[in-house]
Length: 482
View (cartoon, rainbow, N blue to C red):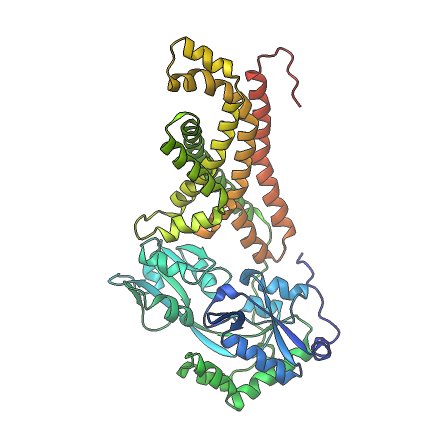
């Protein structure tokens, strides 16, 4: 059963006019020329859709348009929740959205453009069978790629797919021609192929039942086309071309003959298999990252405990910098920032990024455990003739392991959850799979509960194992363990 969308207001248009404000949802990450912060004045947003929103507001009887920042992949759910009056941010007219929303007549016609590395033999999507092709999540291009026998790499930003194409991490990119022209075609080594893979249109999204608002928006766009304002806006942003001549005869999707809608996906066995694959990838990334973090953390702790002043300063700087900056930023720098000199794949970058970050935390855990060892143990080792490193290896670390075990287990559970951040590197782990499924089946409850259950299944045995290891390492015959 589909979740019930929030019903439209009795008269949203009247409410907009009473407020004197049209709230429109969009995502600043969409960037130029859609909607973005003015470089000369970051407190001001600009873009061709900002201009269109302002014109729509005036023409339907509101004093102004107010932009509401909304993550692009959640634009439709936010509209259905009633957070905004309209969705206006490169929203594509697709059969699925047509069945879900009240869509306006088009205000822009786009072309899907395929970009490849210069000199590549790939000329069509058919040539890319089995290859890795990049696009943005929840787009028409994504739907086109999912229907073909190739691997779809999903990104959240517009520049990143083309950067990865430059570096050979993907074999092609499929996106709207506006994005391709501004972010891809001009990059060295990239060729945007002539022609178009498909064509579509941008529309304004409204809640089903908002018919009075829909008619007013359609009328406003008609008037913008008739008096030339829409062309002037598109011209000013250098995105008017001969394709846009078709806007004069375009009509609202609500007046077109209904098209057959595919059966709505459900949380079935196929989805469960995809979730299990995501969970397996999460476990692999987490285990590999922690396998890197533990020995590196021990080394850092040892250096901070007994090396020279320079080595201690470097180890301390590493720990403080890695703990003091967001792991998401570190992943971006490692994968994208260092790409010209260090070309890592998504999985390798994920493992190394998380491993280096958690090594800083493990270093402090081990250092604290080492400091808890009585000074007499160290003096006794020295009296027996053990060297400093021998003391660390044979006396201090075995005892510190018992003290550090609960904190180390807790850190691994935290790493397991932080692995969700690697989705920014196109890794479809468990949490990313959950968000994709939630949008596809139009419900967050089932996918969210399944995602939580799988995380629990992976993390709870660690807690049980940790308690058993604590008991085995405990010399007290009557351990007092919680």
